[in-house]
Length: 348
Length: 189
Image (cartoon, rainbow over all chains, first blue to last red; front, top):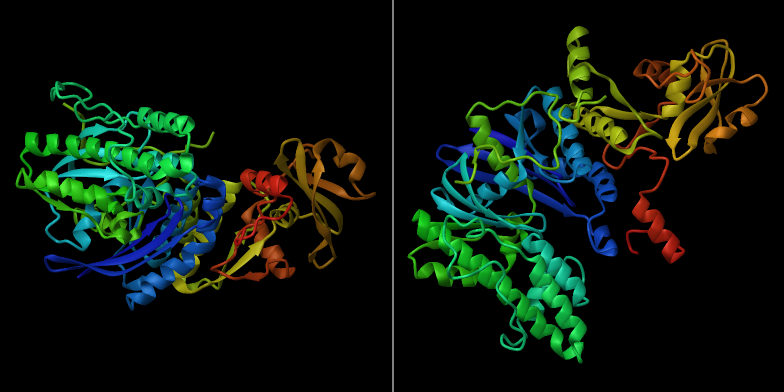
């Protein structure tokens, strides 16, 4: 039995979790997530305010995660903490706290890459979501398409050249006068829109693209966002058009993500597609992905909402993986805004 | 210059515990610098202190960075003004006195002064320590001052969960929001 406490503070969620290795199984013993509502007021995350909030939230979150699991810090084998990528000031709160806790309790310290955590997240409630698979990680800060032949080996296929998928949802939500974060609101609004009223070009998606082309897997959403802005500006009756614009935007974004993902599934002959990140909560995306995957005989694994958004369970799970491989980080562990996922292979 | 790829406070704390052959669980409390000061620096210290305190259910005590500076300077019997760089041409300043028993007392509350006005604001007979002080007196806070503050009753017990440093300033976004809206930002705003 191995117990790992996970801590996540990379953006505006303070989260703590305990996972346990029990034979071949990995069990989620507890997970608590505190979302900082104050950022709704600003229409986006304010790093200094997020960092301050983490410092006043981290102790109650960790104590509750340990309490829910019926455990004490001394029961842990390791403390895993997100140390990249993210808001450095926010990350440093989690890293500092984890280091103090690990050092004073004589436990191992394991720094975890946030995006690797997302790769592990779905496996916590769907044990079949394991390699080999193609992964699509879509959140407010990232859009990555990866081939994962095994845990710890990651081939980056494509990424966004500008806005992340979730960022595009947030910005379009703002253009449409919706609250922050925009994703859930745009999806709800789009559900009432007609698909043909506003048809936007599918960005960076052409039939003649070849695997060796640099844009074969890459995506770009800034042009789509501009097209939405122009549609909003040109609308003679925005109150009537909002839902149709939302539908047109969402269809274009989802069609692009699905098409690029299917290219990866075909080319790498993977039987599974694992989704991760907050945009994986978008049920329209998940349904469209599964419909396309059916034709290739592949299965889609989408995380439950609490494991899709930023959470400490995925950090504890990835930390467990590294701890079992002997990783122990030193007490000078720091935080980084950007850093490659460990095990990431460069593009061909 | 600080190497951003390494965070050095925690290794220093761990090394100190090893040098002193002290078990973490044998500590009575953790005393942390409570600001004002650099936002990120204060949070790093605060987060480490909270982590150590959580591990063994230790008390957390917070000390003013200005009081720590005065205690570090070992001012002797008399009065001093301690100053720290507040950036943007300002300093954080506070007045302290020490009696014959070495007990330090705060004389009023910390203020923010234009850096160029320290000399004219210095009370008669007071010694200036810290940012902008003469060579030898231009000291910085040091953890060794914590014992003086504890003895002087200037290291109050704080709530481990909710405590945060005195940052000295609000976040810029909050300042702007409050200026735009003409009222303080609250959680229900």
